[in-house]
Each structure stands twice: as structure tokens, then as C-alpha cells.
Length: 279
Image (cartoon, rainbow, N blue to C red; front, side, top):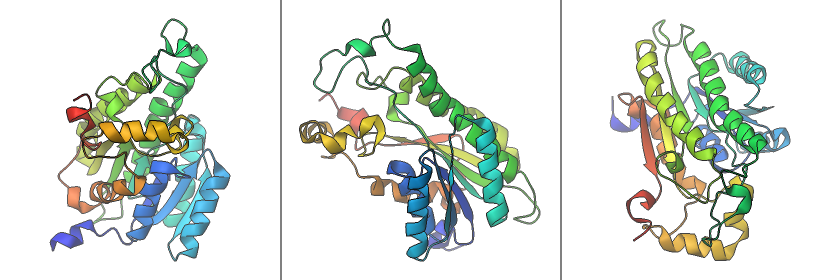
């Protein structure tokens, strides 16, 4: 197979959670632009529908569903709707995530009273874990359920699942809400465990661990606060906080046969933050 042919996903289908904006939207755009039929799902159903309509108007194949990934029944229904619309599932992005509040430091290095472990609201903890960890489990389990169904390739099952983790699952990020870090660390370990479990079925699962990207998470503060944005740009070794379009090539790599010998892995994409952010 020619090397560029390994990146070809034309004729395949993909479902993306958290696809109404930010990283999830970039994943959905990448899949559509590369020729896959895509389901955009998001708790913001109107936003997902708007973006799916925009993609269709641009000549791509896309549909949308409103989805709260913390509701296991709703996740199952969304995957069933995708399979019914497109005849199966080849690629799934378990991407939906939230940050339910500030960490114990703010970007200026001052303590946040509401971010301390002894004052942290248990409801915020539960909400973050339900979306960022349980929601990934529900997404992955339903993707596997459909991908195990035979018939797409010589009667065998298979597919690629990509989970959005974070470098906050690998190192301490004091400006990030406390539950976000163990949730993302849990996603990374889940990916390692499932890489082994699913290899027999030719289902690959990998994670992307982004660093600082301009998204709506945490209220979209990097978009709204130019002072904070400038400060973050200054500490990224490659010189700037990234735009979500910069994730698209990596998403295509992991979704396509170009990564057919990768599973149970994670790829950090953070402009070098984990190498030298405090230098």
C-alpha cells in the first residue's frame, strides 16, 4: 500500500462526542474533510446540528445528535442511531469533557478558595468524573459493541477509538479543577488496559493528550482574557497556545490505517509544555 493511501478514510464512518465546538469539532471536521461520514454529538444539540449542517453545505456527509455522555442509555441510543444511519462504525472519538471549576491556583498564581481540596464542592467532583471518566467509558463500550459486529472487512470486526485525555492526566496542573486530573489519568490507564483487551478484535484504542489549546473549556478563558493568553503564549516552548486545527493531522493519523500498529498508546501534543514550561 502506498504511504498516502494509509491515511485514506474515505467510505468509513465516525462518531465524535463533544463535537459542537473546540477539539471535538476539529476532530469531526478532520474526519469529514478526509472523506468519512460523521455523526457530531454534543450536550449542545443545537450547536452540533448547526455544525453538521455547515459541513453538509460544504459538501461533506454529516449528521448530529444531542447527547449527554454521562447518561449511559443516551450514549447507547446515539451509537445505535449512527449505525442505523451509516451502516456501522469505523472510528469513534471519546472526546466530550468539562472542567467544573478552577484549581487551587489561578493563572496569576494566587490561591482560589473554592479550588482547595477541603472546600471543593462534592457536586462539582461528581459532575467532572461523570463526564470526563464515566462518559468516556460509556462512549468506548458502545463503540466496541458496534465495532465487534462482523461484516466490514472480510467478515472480521475492527475499528479505531481515540480518547481525548490531557497532559493534566500526566503532570500536576494546579490551575485545573481537582477532579479533572484524576479523571484524565483514568482515561489514559483505561486506554492502556483496553488496548490489550481489544487487540484480539482488531479494535485499536489510543489517546490524544493535548496541552494548552484555545477551546471553550473552563468558560473559554483563553479566548476572553488577552493578558492570560499572552502569559500562556510566553511559557509554551514552541511559542504559542495552539488552535484546534493543529490537532487534525494527529486525529487523522490515529483514525486511519497509518497507525495500524498503534494501540494502548497516548500521544502528547502540547507545544513542549511538559518538557520546559517552568524554564
